[in-house]
Amino acid sequence: MAWDEWEHLKTEVTARKSAEMRLNQLPPGGGGGGGGGDQDLVVRQDDLGAVGHEAFMLYDQLGGQADIAGAGADDSGSGSTMRAGAELKLHHFAMGSELENTVSVWTAQVKTVLQACAHISNHLDYSAKEYAKEDEAIGAVLRDRSGAAVPVSRLNEYFT
Image 1 (cartoon, rainbow, N blue to C red):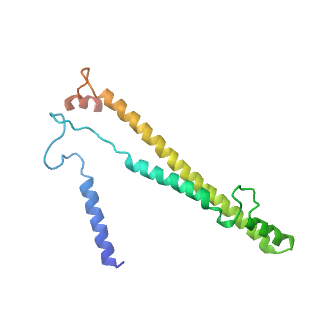
Image 2 (spheres, one colour):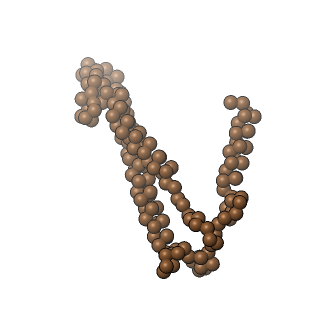
Image 3 (cartoon, rainbow, N blue to C red):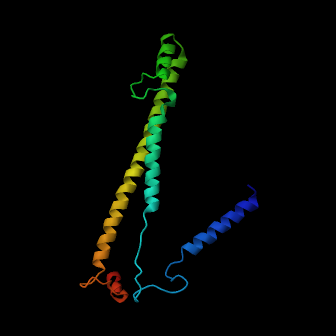
């Protein structure tokens, strides 16, 4: 990628983010607060769900396919690579210990990645549920006795 192409891409991203991040403004065409509109604060959690799903899929695939070093699927250390390391050690080859060490390091690293994937997936599932509960609670607070939305003028009371 040429330098000028990189600069062009950076400029495009900055402009796009700037357009998306305009706060305290109504979108062109009006609409908005307190009037007769039926607009509501909407939080879409599709992105959280997608990331959580991908973390779960990675966890599932990695757990099933990470036995590249041959440690054995049951983690007993009886895989072909571990057996080869033990056999080499038995014949006084230094490579045997190093091979066993490689399998141990690989296994520890795979477990770390699996743990991180599980943590991400579980945390995003939990977050999505908690955000939904919070949205429901906020929606209940911001309704008057008749069930109508609280006017914007009354919302200022919550911020003072």
